Image (cartoon, rainbow, N blue to C red; front, top):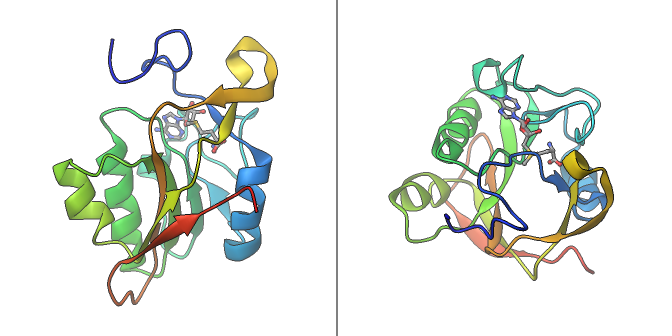
Length: 163
Ligand SMILES: C[S@@+](CC[C@H](N)C(=O)[O-])C[C@H]1O[C@@H](n2cnc3c(N)ncnc32)[C@H](O)[C@@H]1O
């Protein structure tokens, strides 16, 4: 068993869906053009990329990307995509585990425009089990990592979706 409780957040499972109450204030702020890691049921933006179209292979330049990627080994790869896109006009907002002791967190997240540590334990939807209620709180701290063009260094703050 990895860091996730198998009964709740299986590390193999990748389609935990962000709560609308958590997402909406961010969408009001950023006005996302695409959800980079989604499927037809859990997409947060009308335009989305799924496993088939592969968000990692798409052009993120000049997009405003929402990305809650699968929380596996590829998280740094997704972050790199956002970091590269910011050099070419792309903005991206990631919701990821705040694994602050990892090399990738220091290299990639602390080089972003902003990191917002998520207050509390937001609930997620579990569509795979036809669970339309958001009842599952991840047992790991989460953060938002934001890449923007022309960044002046990394701001650190809080995201409290309960306000
Ligand atoms: C943690 S869920 C996020 C769901 C949703 N976008 C949200 O924020 O609520 C990750 C989603 O990414 C999808 N996914 C996995 N690999 C992908 C890829 N290479 N490109 C696009 N989506 C992918 C999974 O099928 C899953 O639906």
